[in-house]
Length: 100
Ligand SMILES: [Zn+2]
View (cartoon, rainbow, N blue to C red):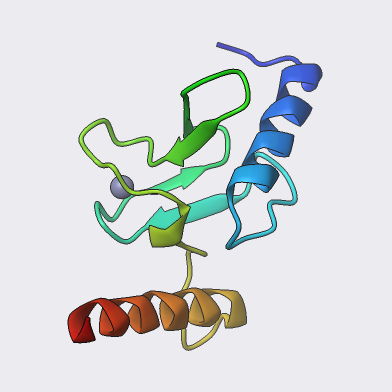
């Protein structure tokens, strides 16, 4: 299905609002899910609506429940500062969870 420019900008606004970890510049940006190891674009992100105002972003893999907190910028963390910052955040979370 081809999305109109209008629904693209709507999707981008939703991505930006619901992903506190990354600034999405456009819907073609890619993310890598660290739970299912899939790389996808903002266009593929599943938006789960609970009400007209409340929604969650989910990984496009049907059986994967990962949200933006598990997504990283694709790329080698040793070469990409953005990817490094994402992995750093994930590892910190994992350490906090392990020590709780
Ligand atoms: Zn996933």
